[in-house]
Length: 299
Image 1 (cartoon, one colour):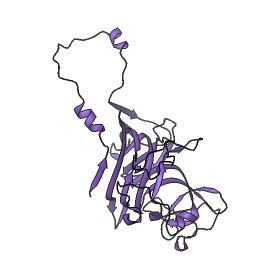
Image 2: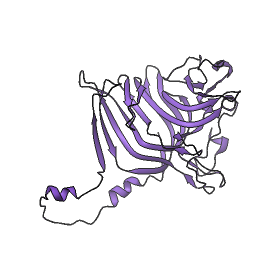
Image 3: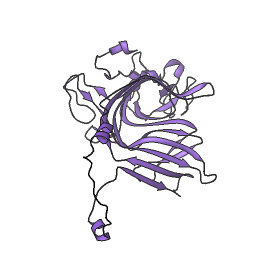
Image 4: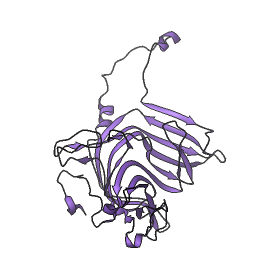
């Protein structure tokens, strides 16, 4: 796999931005002196146990760092087992490049043509889930306590959740459902996406309220704001599970997200998409993700 990353300078700041070395004698300080000191550690470790809604204990390690980046990955495949792949995609990208200086982007700002519209990822974390029965690792996940920005890909197999809204011909929004080619709803190795809540007819073989995931070429991760911009989500993560795990949302609300065995990607999004466009021959257009605009030549 070849990976091209742009703007990933956060680690360099940490590694190279240290102060000059100084030698001094270490002396203990009083409790009163300690009480006058405030600050935030680079890493925070949380042990989360006995939480309603989940049977696992968790250890979450959060880094106190912010990243704004644009990343391109040619090919990615994870969870290859039993003759299939949990997640398989080509030309995956986080962040994009502005094509129009007058277009208001997800954050409410405009960017000059050719400028990077970054993917914003704050407070990255790694979390472990442990079974209290046998003490074994049940799964781990990587995510961000705050994230928003564009995600683009040509996805042929997806396991997890894609939180977009699909708008039917009557103008009614529906929560998107992941499906396989036989129009069976599934969160494991899905190949299609559509409206499958019983309100309209759905048939992936005829593109009736259903489309291949390859038609969903770009979406915006985040939560919806009343002013039309995109807010930060706390539930963007990728998990790897030995067994089903109810992961806790980092927002402290007690909300759980069920991730099945294998790879699980959670993509919260406030994006609304017309089903007729998604099922059409061109699908949802891809945002520009390369300095030289590849257009349709990317595929």
